[in-house]
Image 1 (cartoon, rainbow, N blue to C red):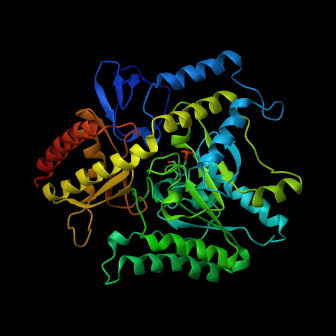
Image 2 (image 1 turned 30 degrees about the vertical axis):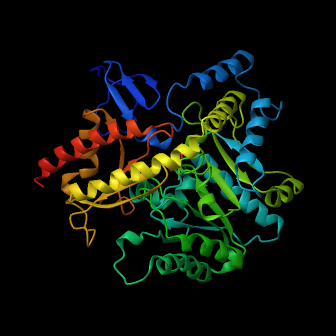
Image 3 (image 1 turned 180 degrees about the vertical axis):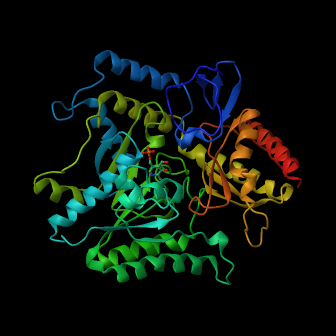
Length: 444
Ligand code: PLP
């Protein structure tokens, strides 16, 4: 920690020490204190920190060229990473467009959808329906789709308001429906919205297959996913899966879409795709969409740093590491272990109202009353407080206000996919200790 003022003004609710280095699932600050990276940063560091094989491959590329503009040269890292990405994604997704982050990946997906629609003569289709709550990024185009009040409200007059449907927050429902019926009920909200907006004006529907920061690892009932695909097909609406957080193995499959056998029309990825070794993202789509756009004169979009060889060499090394060590399988196996550990917390802490997730994207949410899911008193700032108590004890977790950023507190637990059962036990011991401290602070 230092008293020297920083010229940076990133928002941090609390003072933070300087990071020294990383080792697998651990981060070590300059005083030598170790932290378990229980949220992989912001669900980024999927293969853990300072992987020597990845670093060696990046260094080899650095010695050759760190940049070659994509319109001037083809590069092996970008071509090889595109080929590997296609090999790892479901059939039908066979064209890749590289970017440097998640917001760029989302905006690229939306722009491809629009340009494809133009090639089909669907000039009136421009609306992209998204869900509330949701998070798709904070650049203006991505923010149009994001359903998260604190990041959106200051800019509201400057935004184009895209239609929203409710995210399938079935854990808040107190009806007598079966899970399957609830899934269909939420999916049919999309059908109603398309009809209300006018099907000829609707370009696409975008969703996080497993919710991220805004909903806290929200998983819909199985019936939801197939029904959404059917509705999109019925109206010629393109289905975009925002897998910026869920992609690259986080949920125990390369894409979360694979859990439900869904092939979206377009997928955006980032975070775990570069796994913190390089700012990297990708938009993946099928030739069916891409070829007409290229034939009509090309994709009117692109970023200077897209597809640069160093970032792509890092991304390729990350995917090779995942394959060589079956990290996606490990995410599925360790996800089961973690989920049962988190569920067990509910026996001990009455203020944990819900536990959910898929693979190693898991979350728990606080409630003052489990049957109503009424949040804890907002004055407790619980989402902030528990994170601090864990941080002090050497565990990093990630929290947000839930319900679209308005009230409630959820916590994402999403460690690197390399985590072992023993390390999960170590992480849970710290988490229980932090929860005990929180419980005594609030007198529960
Ligand atoms: N989409 C989803 C689902 C995300 O979780 C995020 C980031 O949290 C983004 C998009 C935006 O990504 P970035 O912050 O890299 O622009």
